[in-house]
Image 1 (tube, rainbow, N blue to C red):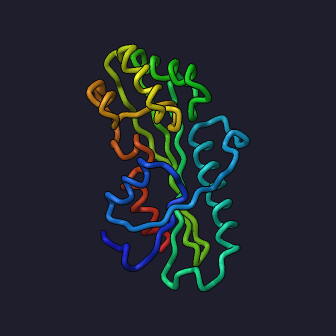
Image 2 (image 1 turned 90 degrees about the vertical axis):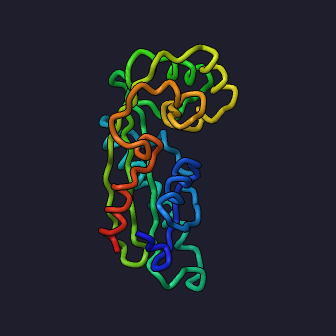
Length: 203
C-alpha cells in the first residue's frame, strides 16, 4: 500500500526504530514530539497504560497543531500516528530505564526470563477527528547475555532510551535472541499490520 501520495502523516515519536519501520512501510512523514510527562500517567494493566500514553501523546500534539495557521495544514487528509510501549518481565511493567544501574538489572534479567513487549498504536485523522487505536504483544527469549555485552550496551547509551532497555535489533543482542513470538516490528515499537489496519479505519 503506497498511499503516501494521497495523505500526509505526522509521526508523534522521536523513536529511531519507529521512524525506520514507517519508512520501511513506504510512507513519507514528518516528526513531532509530544513532550509529556509519561510517568504522571499510571495504569495497572500494561495494555491500559500504553493506550493511555498513546492517547495523551496524540492530545498534546493536536494542541500543538492547533496553533498552526490553516495555510500550514495540507489539504489532503492528515494522519497523526502516536505509539507507546512497555516491557513486561516476570510480571512487572518496565518503561525506559531511569539509570544505568536500572538498565543493567533489566538487561541481565532477560537471560533469566523472556521479555514481553506490549505496544500501542493510535491513528488520528486530523481532518475528521476520527481516532482509532489498538495494542499488540510479542515475546523475546534470549540466550544468556554476557556481562561485557551488557556493559557495552550501557556505554553506548541507546538502551537508556527504550522501554525495558530492550534492543533486539542491535548487533550485540540480535545473535543472542533464541526465539521470538510475534513480529520484529512489534517488538521494535510499531507493529506494521496493526498500523496499516488503523490507517485504513480512519481514512
